Length: 190
Image (cartoon, rainbow, N blue to C red; front, top):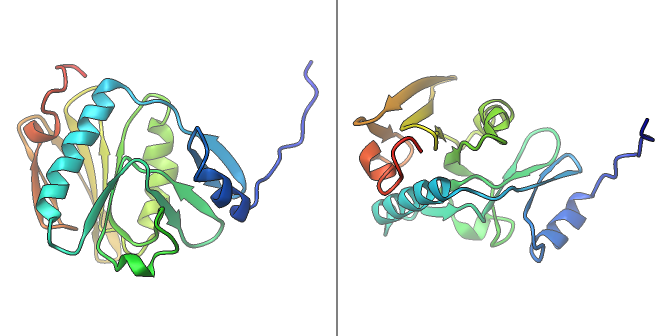
């Protein structure tokens, strides 16, 4: 029988200081660090396709897209920092706490991995939806051509599921993303 070890909590300040130079990125939830896992080839291709499409669309708009190395700090109770697979913010970068963190995203995207699917669908979805600035939250499958879009609608949210050959409308940035473009160069069945 193992001997229980006390869980060591890390202060938010220590996390932020150490994270910039860390060999492995970590998400931070109320003092607990969670190491980020490696991403598959399909995951990376989808993220690249999405970032290119959004970046091209947003050029000159005042909004900016960042890939998986930009932290999002969540407000509300507790202290949380997540690394979404893509994030779009339209706020003034000078109003952000630093050059490594977004606090007012309008669009957040998570690409599902077997190890993160449950957290992306439940914990992270609810956390992002609690942020007043978030308009669209996308959950993108890498196993099949499917995107779940959650869009703020008044005081609530709507959920729409898009399949192959459809187009995902992003209210947050006024953009229509064809599934063929999102999944370009991703092996079928991936």
